[in-house]
Image (cartoon, rainbow, N blue to C red):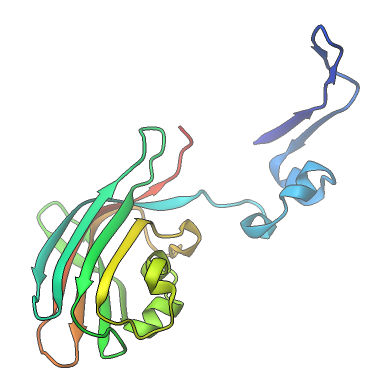
Length: 211
């Protein structure tokens, strides 16, 4: 890939190209160019070239399998995208909890691959106590750190509304292959043997291509 920059002058009746242009191959541009390349050398672009494609997880069709009404009055989950040009889907969760959520609660996530004849669990799982999950998890916990859940743990009985949640692209493990499947979520509590909440959402790990 080659990067081209042109600086033009306004001469009131149009623009003409002055004798200043930049034409650099991407890796040379991002590592050596002192004007625009220097401004762009930040974040993931500070890593050695070449830079891998942006990968994201598309999430659609959430389904709640079970809710224990001793712990939750209700839970609603929706997934949407803002327009056709934006390929990213965003998840909203609205719920009312009837207990104090602390480290007696464990969040369990499983990424499973669609094999055509069913689903099987990948070698990628997350099992974290609630307070640790919310404070440190870079994928799902990161997406949930908003609103009332930004307050210190534990979290009291209340109504919680989480909007526009998505997994940060930089936190998706590079070891995951491109695949279609499901994200399963089970929430457990030390006081009962069975999960107090179970749900899944269809997902696909994709490469971002600008529309």
